[in-house]
Length: 155
Image (cartoon, rainbow, N blue to C red; front, side, top):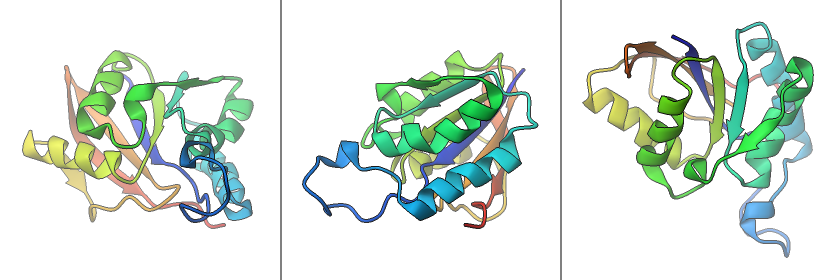
């Protein structure tokens, strides 16, 4: 069984600033530093897939890690803002046999964590999902049963 790392996208400034649609909002300078910092936490793990929401800020959050690991970032609409836990669970299930990083949003991640808790998962630490933070989740058969919170890198 692989490990699953669920990352909330790094800092991308504030919603509604600028003339482009929110889906195209890019990481801020701080967000890029956070994305680089994720490499320190995740580069030595056995990761073979990087999957992110199609929103630019999620793709960019995983780009530095992808460069370090020699992996491309795959976009998956099921991780987009507003999709809830079901999409993230479906993507996770497809990654069960590999080490994977999923990058999503501040509405999807708490829905996912609530679902896991409701189905008996043991999550260590306070339920948080700060920007650029990670939940390291473990599989037991076909279920995610354990998880621990990794705070965002210093930026």
